[in-house]
Length: 190
Image (cartoon, rainbow, N blue to C red; front, top):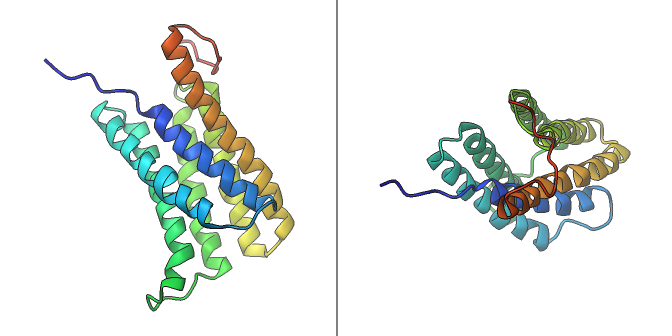
């Protein structure tokens, strides 16, 4: 008898969504980066998403596994890039241009993941990956050019992206608990 494994999608989406909203409130210019964002990045954006990805692997969900473990690792590496230089590990902080390369690579990866959502994923999931692709490239352009206004625009766009992930997480839970659609997610006809 096989043991039923829970859908870890809502956990991963909440880890991604909440952390993304909080970081982009900073990017939009409302608050400085502080320990709250670092803590969320390590524990909820990073570790919780990786756990969700491992569970999705047990469910046979290659897309979910790849997305959650990758973006969980993104959060852990981002926090590492911010704090490692101050830990006297012999490394200097990455230049804005090199951070632009880092963000552009994540934009490229996310663009390919967006293409994967076109196969038959709900419209909300497609929106999450499209808006995240745009977010990464906006942040990369900000770092390449030094244009702070692009960073502010990216912040507002990232807040929308993060809230869309929170919405999908809550819709998945609420719709599953009620056994019917309460919060629509734009299911495609099969």
